[in-house]
Length: 295
Image (cartoon, rainbow, N blue to C red):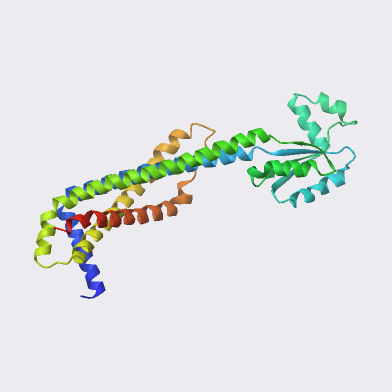
């Protein structure tokens, strides 16, 4: 039998078995879809948490104040020197006049600005965003060593606490996804085992009429693959509906939380779900059917 003909036969047989044992196979699809859905929802929430943490972390900027002797032109040109440093993402120049205006506005009036406009005590400054928060301490030390800089303000302790929290959140996220994946494997394995057990007599008859183990196994593997793909498709649709129309509208009431747009990651989740569904269905079917081939 040609490979193409064999594949068509196994696909037809797998689909036929799905219809004949629709109760058990539907149970397998629903159980696997539920597991994928839980994992998918958790991954989306985990991505939202990471995005929120990253945005909060970006608010931890370094502020530098230049020496009094640095004139206006030199102060503005100093920004080019800062941009050449490795760990600096962006710099924003704040002139002495802008600094005095901000200071007076924070205190609620223009009287302070008018009082000090002719003798401005505010230094030129720069607000700096770093690329890698884990290197912010090294960046601060490099800035302190520059002669034109009078003072450097950086919330190092806050950044360290933020990085520790992000690392803990990442560890917990990876651990929970791994646990959920193992639970999914156990649940689906038990469901497919029940399906296979209910068909043990069918397997015995196939062996008695001369069917090889390879032939029998291929039929079940195709069926397992179909179950996995169907479960992945169902889980993907449910994930989209629940995330876009239930989770996001409810949590959006909390202004501090940032959300990952599903449209930006839909192709990743679709590919991962389909590949994972195919893998789970085939691999678990392979090890489950192995026992009954000894009949």
